[in-house]
Image (tube, rainbow over all chains, first blue to last red; front, side, top):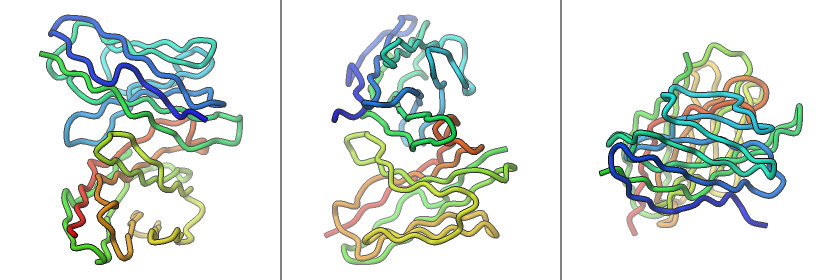
Length: 115
Length: 117
């Protein structure tokens, strides 16, 4: 049973460019959340997708956008990259299950470097 | 406002010593969840434990134990007889509301634990 998978594992982009990161949730999970983890810090919540809709959003600018597909996989897009966007981007999945809920399972992340 | 504070930035102990990682949280909600995650060098966040705000029972899982005290808003994590494989960054985290899978998680800044052989 595959866990959360993210691609690519590493990425180098130039300031001003756009980037797309991808995430496949753990089998059976329908909710995907994205987190940004700067070096030496804890992860920060970007947004969460459920039923192909953005359900919650953290304190990130509109340059950060996302999408969830019918198969529950998700993409994170960042436009007009800044040096400060360099970070480890973590995807997490969970199973909503109505009034039951599962803990988040995280992927290995995508290391984005903006030069 | 929600906040998680891990005052210990780095801890280094010799193998087989016991070590406690401190976590203090702030929330206005009466219903919330607390978590501990482990992050080895590979980067993946490994789920260790989730407790809800109504369950203050301490928990033990092998060499790991957790002490939840609402009176002091703390959720401390103790590793007994530490091993080199325990070396990692450990994060304490909080989510508000009754459904942790539907809520954003607020992470502390992490404690880097180094176990020396």
